[in-house]
Image 1 (cartoon, helix red, strand yellow):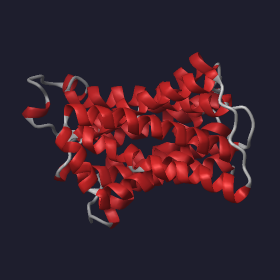
Image 2: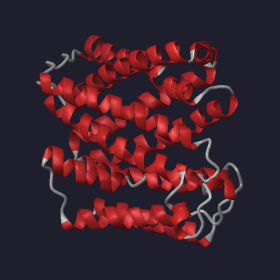
Image 3: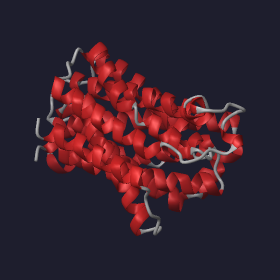
Image 4: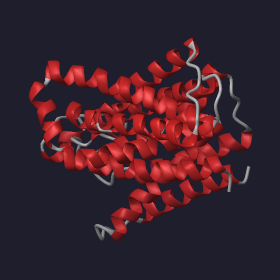
Length: 306
């Protein structure tokens, strides 16, 4: 199996763990902005430590930063802050499954952005794999019923699309697509070094930038939340660790492969989610959800075999 596929699957696994931890923090004591901050505030020191270990212990040299790197990295970093904020906000929505499904349209949106920004074409087989996987995501995400509070007074099929959760989900998908393109562009723009040091350098630069920006925002707008984030260090520290491990996987994968293909394989995160639901929480999936899992798996297999 190719390296980019292995690291993408690992990244999706750690991302799933991080969202579970952040949901716990959101449900307990932190606001949306505070929960979002945990990822970057506790992740930044670990990302910098990784670069320091590579330089001091393995004689790596930090690549030369270029203007193109700064543009791509800062754009990707801001997009990821907003995307993460949208996902955390989804945790407050009753129809979370519907919204998270539309968030997963990031695969198709990333393919479009990759073509427009980086001029990276998608093969016919690759596009088919992406669409098959997306169909599986939508099958799994369709809610069996919505409460009146979830529909904003709308009735009929449009309630599946026109509501706050799906709006946040689609926005998150678009912003995650922008961050993926930004990070791939950033890692490719660094001058010198192999994939690992370029990905690690990009990760460290971006997470420090994100931690500074969001810490400033939270201290100015929600000063009590910053103290709450520091007080939640036990769980928040795990958020930072899983964030760095997941992000490093994504960054390495983006350096090796078209971002659209990476995001398509990353749909395997949904399989981890359903596995945890079944084995940990003893929840049972509906036939439609099982069918969705199979379509996601089929899409990933199409990409692996392409």
